[in-house]
Structures are given as C-alpha cells and as structure tokens.
Amino acid sequence: MRRLSGLFFALFALLVAPREIAAQAVPGRSPVPRLEADDRAYVYGEKLNVPRPRWQDVLDAALWASGWDGSGRSRDLLVRGVDELLADRNLPRGARARGEYILEFMHRRFLRRYAERQTRLDVLAEGGGFNCVSSAVLYAVLAGAASLETRGVITGDHAFITLDAGDELVDIETTNSFGFDPGSRREFHDRFGRTTGFAYVPARDYHERSDLSILELVSVILSNRIAEAELSGRFYEGPGLALDRAALLSVRACPLVSPFFSAPEQDVKTRLMNYGAFLVRQGREEDALAWEDAAFRLAPDAGLWEEFAFACLNNLLVKSLRAGDAAGARLLLDENSRRLSNGNYARLDLLVSDAEMVELSTAARSPGETGAVLAALASANLEPARLVELREFVILTEGNRIAADQDWRAAIAWLEEALDRFGPSARISGALGVYRSNHAADLHNGFAGLYNKRDYDAAREWIQRALAEFPDNRQLISDSELVEQALRR
Image (cartoon, rainbow, N blue to C red; front, side):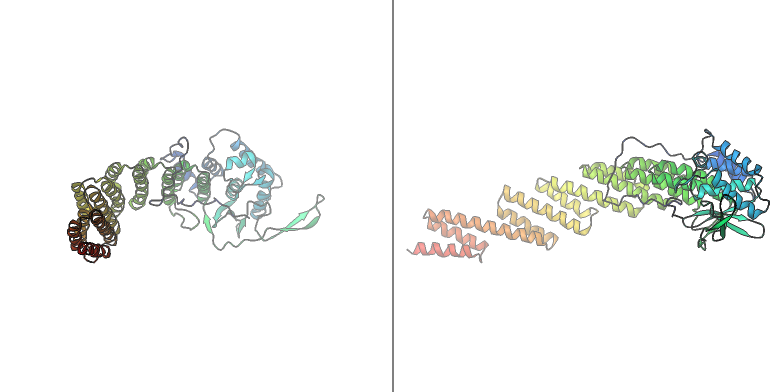
C-alpha cells in the first residue's frame, strides 16, 4: 500500500521571515473563505453519534462531507448498489463470511482504480476512483445496510475498517479485493470452480493505530479535502471545511485523542492561519491583516496572531522603506501597534527608526542640521553598532562639507571636536590623518609658491607657521632647511 500523501493535513509554514520577503503576486483574487459551518454538519453529527448509525445517514453524511451538491446520480447509484447487495442470493448469513463477501462485492460493483487522493464518495460512485478513506466509508455503508457493525481505524498514513464479527474483530483493507483479514489465505479458483492456488494480502504492522467511530471516519473525508485543497493552492477552501468538520464532531462526548487524528479546534486554527499565510505569500499583507481581524473571533489565540501580524507588518514596512517612504512606514507601524507585543513593536520600530535616521543623516546640509541629526541619533532606537556607523557617517559628511566650503584647518578642528565628544573612532581618526596630510600638503604648496618667486623672507615666515602646526612633518622640515640655505647665499 503506498503512502497516502495528503491523507492528513499539515500546517503550511508560509510566513515570510523578517527582511526576507519574496512576494509572488498572482492575477485576480481567490474567493473569500467561508467563516461559518454548514448547518447540516450539526444535523449529521447528531445522526451519526450513535452506536450503530443508520446506513442511509452514513451515506448522506459522507456525500455531504464529500462536497456533493445533489446533482448527478451519485446517491441513486449507491442506493442501487445497496439494493443489489441485499437482494444477492449468495450473500452469506454469518458475519465473517458476509463481511468478506461485501468486500468482494464492493470491488466488483463500484471500485475501478486506486487514486491516492480521491477521498470523495460521490466521485467514487460515478467514476470508480477510490483511496483508503472513500473505500472504507463505502464499506461502512454497505456493511451497515447488511446489518454488520464496523468501526474505522487510522494510522500515520492509512485508514481502513474493522468488522465486529461477534467473537472476533477482523481488519479489512478496503483498497484490496483480497484485503479481508490481511495475512490470511485466499483460494484462487478457475472458471470450473477448481482450486488453482492461493493469494495473500500481507498483514501490516498496525501497532500504531487508533479506532474511529463511523462519525469520525466520515470526518476524515473533510480532512482529506482540506489537504487536497491546500496542496492545490486553494487555501480559501480550508477554513469553511475545517469549521464543518468541527461542527460535525462537536457532538462527541469523548473526543478521540490520537496523534493521527487532528483535534477539530486546532484544525480550524491551522486552516485560518494557512489562508492568512497564503495571502502573505502573494504579497497581500494588507488583506492578510484584514483577515486576521475576521479570523481572530474564531481562533482567539493572541500569541499565534501576534506572530502573524508581526510578519505582515514587517513585510509592509520593508516595502515602504524600499520605496523610500520612511514617514509612511512610521504611520503604518503606529496605526497597527495594537497588534504587537512590546517586544515585537520594538523590533519593528528598530527597522523604521534606522530608515528615519538614514533619511535624516543624508539630508543634513549645514552645521545646524548636522547638530540636530547628532542629537536625534543619541535618542533613536538603534542597535549600538548601527548608531556608531550612522554617527560616523554624519560626522565625516560634515567634515567633507567643511573642507570644501572652508579649508582643511576647519575640517580638522571639526573632527578633533567629534573625537573629544564621542570618544575614539578608527574611521574618524583615519579621516583626520588624511585631512592633516592634505592640509600639510597645502602648506607646502603655499611655501613653494613663495619660494619660487624668490620671496624668501615671506617663505621663511610661512614655513615657520606651518611647522608650528606640524613640527614633525619631514616635507615641511625640508622646506625650512631649503629656505634657510637660500637666505644664507
């Protein structure tokens, strides 16, 4: 038996990680999810929540769970099959023999081809495609009509039926015509009735299994439809189907606790979240936030939606900031602060504050504006390393502006003041060294101009002032020696 991918649903991890958005816009809009259970779910739940539900009720509930809309011949075909079974003169009287005969009849009359994800009873009736769930439910209908008692069984990747044969419980692999009591011997006969050999359906290891009531077995049809819809990208179907399943199972006095059978309340929560995550993956974060507001009343799990809102807002903020709209990002964050914990608000505020400070830092054009930016940086919500990086950028930008508008001496004074105010900085110290070298080069050039004019007295005065600033500069020392030699001649 192949593993039934999609038999049981899984949470789709679609939420986009912070700063790693990869929106996938798609044309058009998907239908809006249904946020109320079908009233028929409660009716069928009551009818099936009995020890031995009527086969007609099991049939109708299974067709409803399959999504049958009442058109076509599905129900008539199945009822006709029941009538044929009950009218069959070869139908044994004993429970065990009758149970085996029903399996063979079902394969002969209805089942045509195995389809791993075909869980709907109406599709089985009209086309013959089946999987373990749809065939198990059909067996339950036929067995119930034949006055046999059955229950469902579920494992990690499979579903089947157990027959109560009075003095024993018999497992039945409904996907195989030889699946009655797996592992027992089956005789092959030729067309003259002679035994030609035996066939076996190997017994499976079912130590991890959970028994299902017929009601719970029918609900697995809904579970499989959810999985099929989500695997096909139709996430809008999940919430309504999960609500139907929760309503169907709401009548149970003793809910099944099994790792193979999802709790309906958790199922609803997962489907709501998956649809929201689907919107995020499409790049529709605003729709996703509106969805959160609608879905929260059905799944008021503050922690779950808190992380969902954080992912949506993170992506929206990234979009705004990439578009250069820091003001819009700030407005968006403040308008949605109610959705966030203090910690998550601080994380997003850090993102927006960084962009705001970058915008301010790059816009400064005067000493006054630069001073205002440095004051704003001191109180901004920034990582320490980022604060240092932006502050150094502002200081160095202002230094370059001063050097261009005034001279290197004024720029040097600015950097020296910054080091005294904010402490050591390798970048600023490096720039200061360059400024000083440039200033010393200008002083040398000024000296060279006077010297070349043979104005040696002025050149001596110039170089003495230069050496007062840079007493250890070899070029300036050499200039001083040169002009002294000229004056001695």
